[in-house]
Length: 66
Image (cartoon, rainbow, N blue to C red; front, side):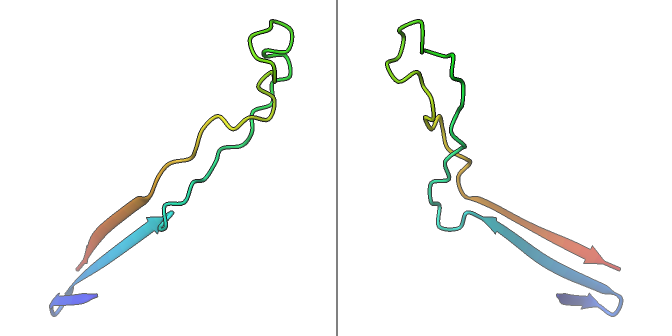
C-alpha cells in the first residue's frame, strides 16, 4: 500500500496460477460406446487423456482508495 496523499492510498495486487507451468491433464474421457463397435479405434478411446488445462495465468491489479 502506497499513500499518495493524506486520504488517498494506492494498492497493488498480483495473483498467479500454475506458476511452474506443469502439465495439468484434463480428466479421462469415459464413453464406452465410442469406437468399440465401429472399428474406428482398437482401444475405443476409453480412459484416454484428451487434452490439458490452461497454461500459466498471471493477473495484476491496482486499487485506489480515497
